[in-house]
Length: 182
Image (cartoon, rainbow, N blue to C red; front, side, top):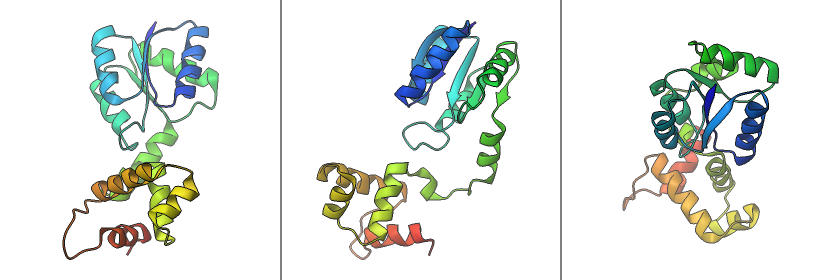
């Protein structure tokens, strides 16, 4: 059975590749984003694709949106029981679909259209430090990253929260207010 894996974590991708190969599956390609998934599915025509729900660039629902385009898919958030995972994969390859119940429940209860959902975990960490009153230099020291990385995170936060530059608003304050829920 031919499989494409879509997982942005290199370690998880390697683990899934080994698990599936040892389980008798042929992993034809492993990719790290939804666009590459669609290309790989089109090129290899696998029997099944194992797709991480949260993938770059926003780590929200890119995986699920790409999987809906592919035929025969298994959506996973994490693999807790190897035997259950391999059984689900075999059901998918036989023409079904398997959804991790925990993933589905998380997707259903997720806040609708909340711009904070667009932020990556690192961007949320930066925004939390901004809410604590840290400057860019303070964030640089706290996260042990370069000043340019912090500037990039802050810029991404502004873009994802739809905070365009203006002469009358302070975007940093508005971002923190959104984070605090006011």
